[in-house]
Image 1 (cartoon, rainbow, N blue to C red):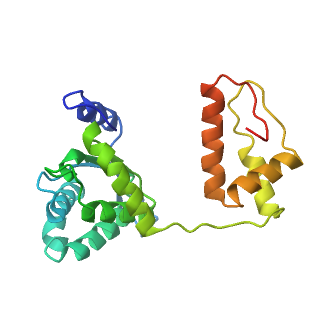
Image 2 (image 1 turned 180 degrees about the vertical axis):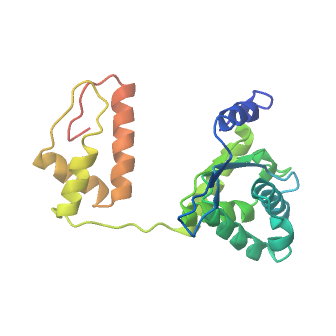
Length: 231
């Protein structure tokens, strides 16, 4: 979430988060795995000194306060790498729904450059746990951070599954995504359409989804009512 300083970003997000219970306690007498304390969301301010240790301490303090545990004392005394690993384990243990990181402009130093270390850890954590992370900051910061996030994604890598042309799973994927058309007049799938999509995406699902989203956006913005294979 990007906005100029003082525009109410943090207050707006805090009000939205407050609509959801931050802690859910699951408890039945018949299940030995319970009680279970599920944390729906956590909002942590980015340290002004860009310290990974400072971020970890804030996270552990907030999580521990929610569930009634002194996680900072138990898991915050080791190296930063060990602490990040422990944070991942605790996030899994409590089924953390979303992590909101505010004041992310602190990641950008005086020279307008962002350090990569903490961001890499956060993006890696998000990918490994399949946990969304929401960043809140000023436009100047997010412009710099976008390039850092792109670099982090490249460093982490992505498992690109590739289907062969005509593969049953590929045809099923295309036919399924085809239902999500937001133009006035829907189009039907045709052989030329399948061929064109495969040519543009080479059978990679990730590329197909990105292409589909961008195509729909283009059609809507330009006022076109239907798509075509050459679109």
